[in-house]
Length: 190
Figure 1 (cartoon, helix red, strand yellow):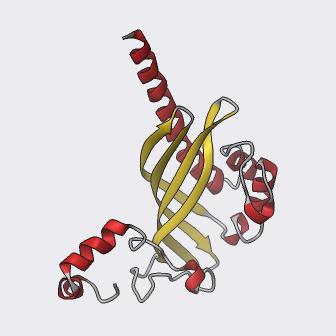
Figure 2 (cartoon, helix red, strand yellow):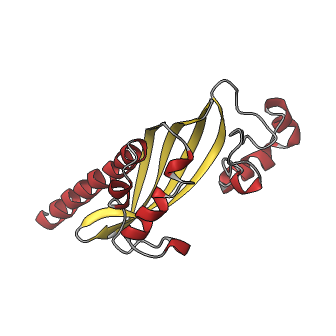
């Protein structure tokens, strides 16, 4: 019983540590602290063409197109799921509502991060974050089609098109079963 209690306690501690990561990430983005953001990731994080490691990730975040792509921002973490793979790996999702100042626009986004977490140097870190979003639009407009992507002068085109909710296989199964008539009753922009 003691082993079971110790394992359960370790799992609770791990979950609490993992749950801090998205809020700390949001704080780092909004305060433009690229070093703090990079420190939330595994020491050997893969940054694609930017290289490997936290220093490479920090350079990526400091690039004009990333943290310099908007002036002010507010990232509100709305909820998180955590699923343990084993004692050193977990996956999860994080809902986020984010606002960004870009010249004369305040652009709102509804985001879901698909995360992988890993124990790195004795603490839980992000291993990988995959951002998908439902929409982006100036706060004075409602999200609308055909692609729900309205960030004036920036992040336009198919490369930046929202992937949600269509990325979920359950979404497609639901609406395929419901049929085109049911879909047409609730949306003009499937």
